[in-house]
Length: 187
Image (cartoon, rainbow, N blue to C red):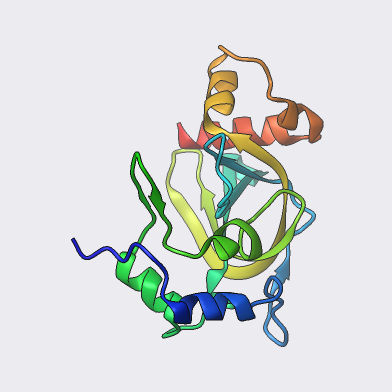
């Protein structure tokens, strides 16, 4: 069906030349490492590409921030890795095998928003009114650092009142309230 199941030798060579996570120099990058970022994904996920947090703002509104891994900081437009990702457009999950959009060294390490690791991200900031309307938004680059790695199943059970507080939530001061705020806005 046109899927590229393997990375080309050129893509693997490009990956081999990348030695460390990206560090933007000379460009404006906000420092949001001190915020209470957390990932919520599958129990066994290693390619953490998104973090979230919420902040209450005056007037009953809520600021929602979503940090997405800044792969563009390491993968250049038109490169062999970019061509592979552009062709497949997504990771494909089958019962037998996973065909990743990006090489594992990028998706689970160099660009992954792993717990405790400083990473570059693209932040989508939205202010949501008490009525659910979008009141303001912005997109910008930022440095982030995840404070908790959470799983959908345990967070959902906890929020629904059918499970205990996951250990990672209890360990991060203020995270429980933050997740409840995110859930209220989603509802």
